[in-house]
Image (cartoon, rainbow, N blue to C red; front, top):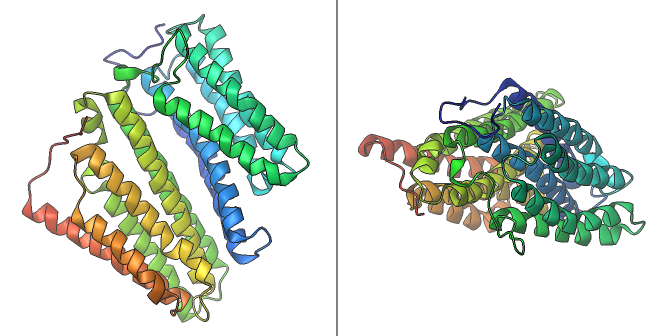
Length: 394
């Protein structure tokens, strides 16, 4: 059967792809739990812990992203593609298991699994598909992965943990540069996966689904935090506040731009570039949601008393990161950014010196008020203006 999608091919995600997403649900819970530990036990230090968690998260994200781009270009029902998805599932699950100690005793497991997965699935696909549909694309990706692989392995095996972070950061920089530019390679040029042949509806749905996974992970954090609390009035207030904030995150994302990603990709003159930029916008939003969920954990379990300044990274920084990514997505879809989102970012920044003198629950409530303001502005805009047609800037 042909590997490249036809115009009449299935646009919705297959059950196997949704099965793969369950692995990343688990992975996000491990990332979140690791960050919560950094804020509460202080063994690694918050900033160092956040940096390490970010590197682990970026590695997992690029595994998922390359899979999604591939299944938006190739037929996910083809046996070769399904085998690659299963291989990805096994590798990503192993990486997720290693996340809690991914910079310690399980660093080598994480690194070697990552390298084996990234290179192994491209090599398998090239051999099993007999070089179809574009052997040069496989070669481009393998060359770039070959540049980063030694950095991953050396960093994972190194006894000195201080060099692990820089080596892995450089490795990720190489890989993200490659996928952003289309893996430019001497003699054979560059080409993003799929080019204009990407299935816009499928790709957009997959981005939306992963963002919902992140929101689901935040709900999981809320439930675990509240179930382990004393069910006092202040903790119950934190529980309700966190749930309300989660609903607003969902509403802000899906207000117009989050609903019409497929139309934007379909109307773009450079669909591959837009798909890449949307990936980074969603990456930013998902990181913001995970960090916001950490903030929920903090003000639910310890709603009153002294607010450590570093907690504001999660309580205010998480929503700010989400709004920044959402603003980028709006520009990618409509070539503009709503003033309400910029105002929300400004308000969260201005809240920082004030929040230093507040209790954790009150700081969380202040962040929720900002999100409520953005949500209300979206609702007013919907009433006053007809539905917009996507007008991507390129």
